[in-house]
Length: 296
Image 1: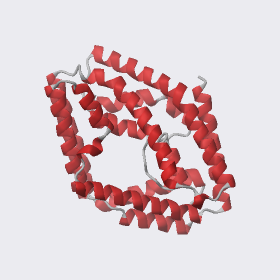
Image 2: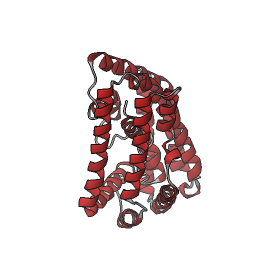
Image 3: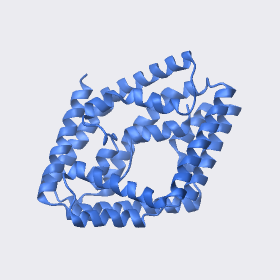
Image 4: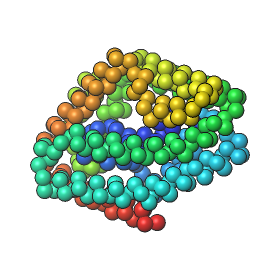
């Protein structure tokens, strides 16, 4: 399917990295469930949600829809049985650190590495499930896909250009809400840290748009021309979009990562005993939910 759609959607399912705090980041890199009151309910609806997302980009025929359903069910079954137990163990370890350790001394790069492995394993499995379906797209569907990707890209850029202040406000609100979910509350100092991060974080919407344009053009070209080994080329593009990054964009992303790390360290240093207790309980609750889901 549309690689950008798959990449974006899988990212939201497995690795939506908002980086509000180190431990909050860890949870968000597993599942984005901020709008749902029940993690179990949300997880069980992921297949349906992903199909809706893909429908925004291209209309599938009956046979393709059946194949999509089969592929998603296979992925979901694999993910439930093999990955959720790993997530539960990971969350329990984080809960132990939150309750017994010095949060400021925990290695953020080590946490990032664990999360990166979760992301790589799950995204690679999903991409491989969906690539055969991408090979079945007709020329007309590829044209529709290309137009949809263009429209989504322009919509994102125009939204920022029209009201960058509103975009920053929404980002501030989202990070604050995520922090409240895991910490229970956010004090004045923490709100200041979040606001400062949103105001200062490196972001160039034009540069981001250029990179998306380059990636999408390469993907559509491979999908249309179908060179020898093209499915592996598509997989490589989806799994490693960084290969097309310009040096300027790479520097911007590195700066954003460092700023997010700094925010994480500062927020962790500012947590109260009550917030750490709330975080510990939330981590354990999510670990329990993952184990319950894995057994179904």
